[in-house]
Image (cartoon, rainbow, N blue to C red; front, side, top):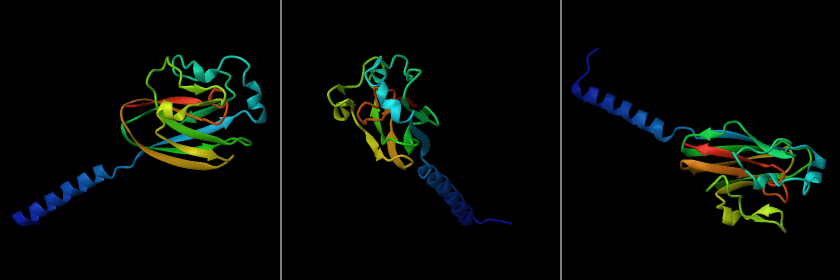
Length: 169
């Protein structure tokens, strides 16, 4: 089979455009997020012991947390990231908020009387709000390289260990 210059040029342009379109429309990175707790008695640990959300230390929630987030991955490439969130609790409402993490040694701004993080001061980027038990939702963000924290901001949940760090490279 022979190609004329015009046909060859057209073929090469078509291949190049298809490759560029494939890159431009690449699927977002998906992070599956499970919001969980140890049942109705989870809140009974509030105020008994260290405030887990306040001492991030090395960036991992403390053992024995009454609540938490489980992520399918803790490192993602920069760009579009979709968080597919499921509330795996049988009894409690949970939510997931994404905020940039400026410093792992500095606690998020916390409103003690309200028992929740000050979302505006923390740099709230987006959320999947108030999910009933068994419900799910999604949030898609364009993320730059850095460290971020995902947390539940229902009263008391953050301090009971309901947070996780994620790295964007």
